[in-house]
Length: 255
Length: 283
Image (cartoon, rainbow over all chains, first blue to last red; front, side, top):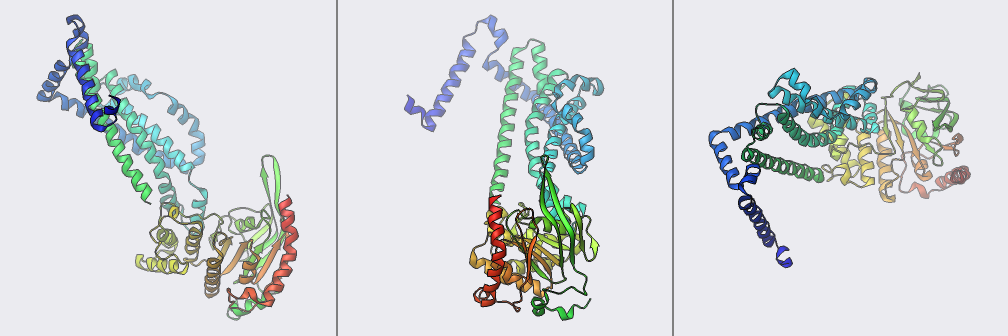
C-alpha cells in the first residue's frame, strides 16, 4: 500500500479514489433534512451547467475579474508614481510618513462600507477598495526600493556629469524595479481577496455577490456552486502567478 | 598656461619642485577631516597641505585608515573638509567636482547592465552624447584595452572581482576626464595582470595628459607610475614624506622594478612607511 503511493500513478489513483469516496459520501449519506444545508455534488454540477447555459457564470466571473483588474491597475500606477515622487522628495516624505504608515497598517476592508456610501453599490466601490489596498502595498514597496538604491551608484553617475533626470532614469528606476515587482506580485492576492470581500459586503455582481446572494436565500446548491467557481479562479490565479514568477526568476538567473 | 614644455618625459624630473610659477591643479590647504561616530569624534586626517600640478601623477601611500580615500572623496567634492580649503583650478570645491573621474575602491557598476553597457554609460549622458555607433566602437576599444574582449555581454555578477575592477577602469577612462582619482584600482588583480594594467594606465594617462591622484598600498606600484609619492602616517593621517620619482619616462613597468634607482627609492620610502604600518596595525 505504502509502496504504491510512492509512484506518481499510485498517488494520482489515491487522489481520485479519495475524491470519489468524499463525493459519494456527500451525495448519499446525508438525510433529506441535512441535504437542505449541504446540497450534493450532482446538484451543484447541475447548477453550474445551468449558469453556463444562461450566461450568468461568465457575467459574474467577468465582473469580479474586471473590478479586480481595474482596481489593481489604478492602485499600481498611482502607487509607483507617488512612491517614486516621494522617494525623490525626502523632506516631504518625512512629513507624510506617519500618515502613510497609519493608513498602510489599517485593514482597508474597514473602508468598504464607506466606499459604498460614497460610490454606491456597484463597480466603483469595488474598484476603490481594491485600488486603495494595492496602492499602499505598491507605494511602500516603491519607497523601500528607492531608499535601498545604493547611493554610491547615484553619486558615481552624478560625478560623470549626469543630470538629475539622467540619474533617475539610469540608476534610480532600474534599481527600484525589482522592489516594485515584488510589491505588485504580493498585491495580486490582496486585490483578489479584497474584490471578493467588497462583493460579499455590498454589490450587485461578481462571484462574491453570488455567494452572498444564494446563501441569503438559503440556496445551499447555489452557494456551493459559486464557492466551487471561486476555488477554480483562485487555483488559476495562483498557477498564473507561479508561471510568471518562474519566468522572471529564470530571466534573473540568466543575467 | 604653457603646457607644451611639460610633456611626460620631463614630468619625472620636474615633479619635485614644479609649481613655483604655476597655479596647482588641485590644492589642499590646511585640509583636515574629522568624523563623528556615535558620540565619538575620530580624526581621520590632520590638517595637511598638498599641491598637485596639472598633468602630474601623484601616488598616495600609507597604512589603512590614514585618510587617503578621504582625500580623494574631498577632491571629488563628495565630502566637505572639516578644516581648510580644497581647490580645483584655483576655485574652492563646493558640491560635486565633475571635472574628475573617480574610480572608487568599491566598484560602482550597475548590476543590471552588461560589462559593455556599463562602460558605455558615460557616453550616453547628454553632456557628452555621441552617435551610438561611435560610442560602441569606443566601448569595444576600451574593453580590449583592459583585456575583457569576449566578456561584453556578461553582467557584473558573472565577473570576478578583478574583472569588475577592469570594467570600472574602462568606464572611467572612456570619457577621458582631465583628472583621474583612483582608490586602489588594482588591489584585486594578480601580479601579471596588474603589470599589464599599470602599463596601459601609464600610456593612457600620458597620452591624454591627465592629472592623476592614485591611492595604493603597494609601494612598487606607486614608484612605477608616479611623479611624486606621498607617504602618510597612520591615523590620524598626516604627510610623513613626499618623494619625487626621478625615473625617466616612458617607464618599462615590467622591468623597472629591477633597476637600482627603483630599489633605492623603494628602500627609502619603505623606511618611512614601515613604522607607520606597524603603528597602524597596533591601533
